[in-house]
Amino acid sequence: MQGPNDLLVDDWAAKAKHLTVGSTFTLFSHDWNVAGIVEHGKGGRLFVPITTLQELVGARDKASIFLVKCTRPEHTPDVIDEIETLLPNHPVRPLKDFMSLMTSSNIPGLQTFINAMIALAVSIGLLVIFLTMYTTVLERTRDIGVLKSLGASKILIVRSLLTETALLCFLGIAAGIGLSYLVRAGFLAIFPTLSILITPGWILRASLIAIVGALFGASYPAWLASRKDAVQALAYD
Image 1 (cartoon, rainbow, N blue to C red):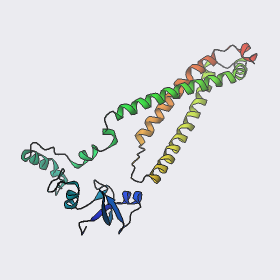
Image 2 (cartoon, helix red, strand yellow):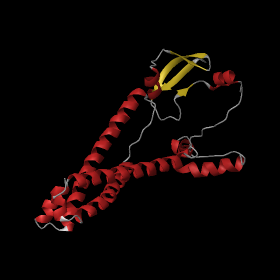
Image 3 (cartoon, rainbow, N blue to C red):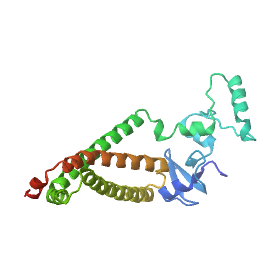
Image 4 (cartoon, rainbow, N blue to C red):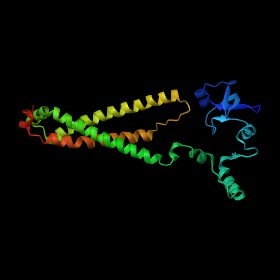
């Protein structure tokens, strides 16, 4: 930045706001000249001269945050201790801890809301699986009767229904993961500055919930099917 009205913008914000070097961007009712585009991950999206910003917000010669860069990362704890000794009434945090305060996971009540939504989704999923498998058992009453008349054991019938449930569950997991990545790509195309992470941990957790829920929801209908009388099942209309 060479002039008081120059502005730097990171590549994500430039893509979202359709900015190029030399463009004009309005911020705080002030026109800024885009002097350059930098890589994202620098702690902010927009960078302007501090003196100009202080004048615009009425905070001349004032600052709310100071960033201190150590010559070597391993010196960070010692530098923090020394600053806390000199300025005991001011919080001092490593940059990674400071950035973590700005993540969505630190919003009050958000984790409780997420857990409630997960519990609600699992409950609805169990009910849907239960009703689906119960309907499947009713529709295959005659087939079950044929199997029992041929000497199929209760274990065989239960295993057959649970195997079908597990297969459908794995197909559903694959479709769900694929749809998640597709929706994520759509959101990122519309909102380039939005950060959506699909981590292996979440994929594993969701898969386990789906598998356990599917097997649990199908267990009772499978047990009912195994207890059907062969003669009544064959006569079922």
